Image (cartoon, rainbow, N blue to C red; front, side, top):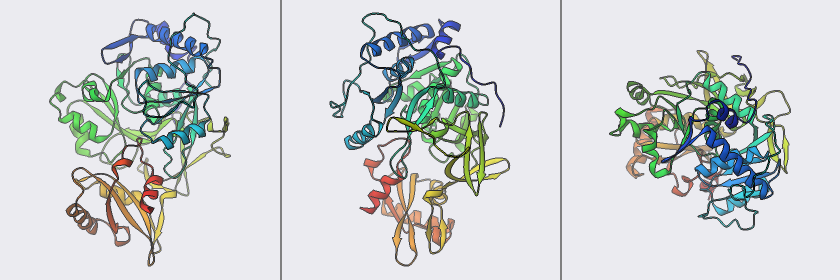
Length: 464
């Protein structure tokens, strides 16, 4: 693990940059721009407004909303009063929102004026400036609990992962030691803040003192032409490279995730000056753990500074400066592990000093006496030109115990001819026990969740 000088801000990062670079643009939203001095002043006023509404140190404020300038102001103001910030996916169902709010036992909820949910039973806080200026009696203590992020809950009830400013900043420092993001650069907040990848963008901005850009979903493609950095899935990058304005793009670096990364795509990006990165990360480690410039290898790179990683019986274990404070249950923070290392349940191997992820230990099943890792089958199916997204799950079988089924989101229409084409393709690509016995269309109502689709939800749907 590379050694870095520990992250050390003498005060809140936005106040530090307001003193160092008061007039430089820090935050932009559509046609609005805010300097670091304006950001610091705005956060102070909103923090005073939270105090007037009764928000206290160590209380939990949960936000149910998509990304917006208001959500960024809320995050910073909540931290400034010593409270804790959590965000929920606004595309969940009412039942799921109620379940997660009950799990968090939050003290306050914030939601926009136009909200599809019934949240009247919760104590609502508003984003308001102070009516009377007052001192905010909270000092900068980076080791305090700051944010809660719910895991994807791929195998059950999501866990609320607690991070401090210190772990977030250590994560940002480690990535930016390898990936250039400098003063004057701008990173588009292209991922939701209820996901650790979106939260990590905010802390990279705060660590570097660069620029953070926000936009409405309708203006996403246009916003991409105005920034130097973005976190994208391959289809988003493909769309912007194929657009008429590709030649005038300012993009320098893109952090890719969420799907298989075609080599041709990264080569096209490089030809117009865009460096593409990929990696491996998790909520408990404040986002990215390993990274590399994207290439033809299926590996996910080497371990970033401020992190440590080892394999034990093929399972990934991690620790380091970015490891979370713990899981939040019953208003208490519990350690994520009783041991020094955190066992991730991810299976991997090392090849040529690069980590290769095999899949989740708890996803594996046995078919006809053979161990089947669903992710192995998914990687092969993702290479088919008509497949956008795919999940492989087991179904019970009297003869083999369990057999694989593929749930597919197609790039075009999901048809019988596509199902036959996939069956023919897999006949050539994998051994018999790894071939899906059925191909099913991914339900559209399950496509509307977070960045990661829950395997638990899919298993329940399949069982029904």
